[in-house]
Length: 89
Image 1 (cartoon, rainbow, N blue to C red):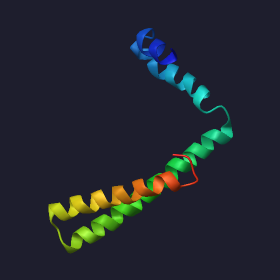
Image 2: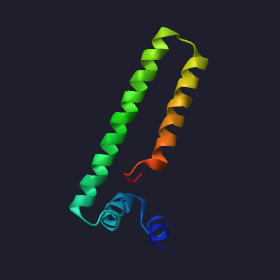
Image 3: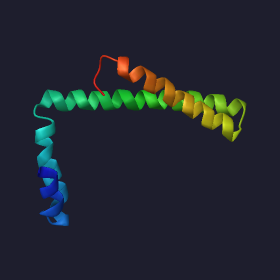
């Protein structure tokens, strides 16, 4: 209901203010906000490390199928680890 009202009833100029006001529903405490920020920073660092490894290997053999295969394998590895990780995703 809230999402429908935000998109149907609010003027487009005020939509960001309404979305920011709705964040209080998603992150009710300051601790929840910082926990989510920490999760996103950790995920960014993991993704950056995987990208650096992939590009490092790609420099050894610069062919597009190898790059696509490495990206697929990195996504598969991360996806296989996600269900068994104790942290929420």
